[in-house]
Length: 382
View 1 (spheres, rainbow, N blue to C red):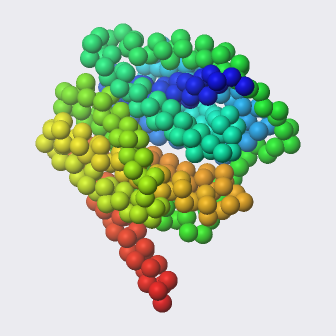
View 2 (cartoon, one colour):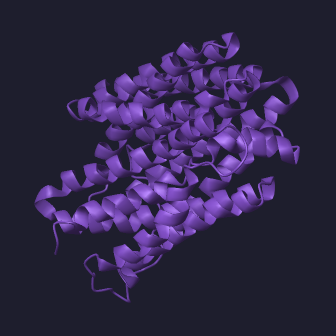
View 3 (tube, helix red, strand yellow):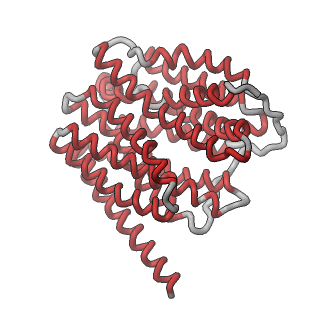
């Protein structure tokens, strides 16, 4: 085992997730050229989840059966292909296919990569291994959009953004390099499918995660369209980067809190953050949009996410992986479905009113969750 194994694996995970939001600042231009509206944009955005969730569930045990290196190399190749496809033919159909491929790539890379990183670190450093995975993937998810935003600012519209070349050229090279990672002896009897589990007591965390990730889904799917209409296209990349990175910065603080306390802090930040986003959208104010984005990110990828990951798997000691899969069913349902509904509504009433309708529904969800928690507390006292 080499000292370079963990950094190389982290770089592979970064490369796969770098491709996921790499194209996001280009969505408005591509969809305008194809004659699509907000509904088409959010449907293409949600196609990522259509590739990710079946891969996590149906192929969750693939790396146990065939080894870790193959799925990671395949994920890197799929990421490069998904980047190339809409570049050659920037249409809505190509974008949907690209997003599905990116979902499959993320599912393969995260399941195999997290397992391999834990094996490289050893049982005694499991938390350090998890931090490496979350750090590499969070920086990748946000870094791709930021790089494209900066590229467009420097290059202007037209042509392939410079940010695409690391994904197109670097990913195949990394796919070959990752074959030098330690080889795990495969278990041909390992089951491929890992059905989600929803242990008793997990619903409050799952619902909180769905409500908070809904804000992030709206930010990534809808804000580039809104910023384009406000002639603020250059801010799309920084906004998407902030939507992920601010939460990453909050994770050390969230780790110091108990699970229930971290969840409570996150749920208080959710409405504050989206109120800032909505006000910024209505007023065309970049500072308000950035503030709202940072607060929603702190809630979704900081406090609520860490609380859920710490508490829910512990509720099912004999089925931690399945409980985590169940948690992500909540998370990605919140991430994709509200954004799709808001996109369809925006084509009828406009982007800002659709964001307002989403915010009203989110507030009702938060209120219902608070009443449920209070009723559960009274029942426990009784």
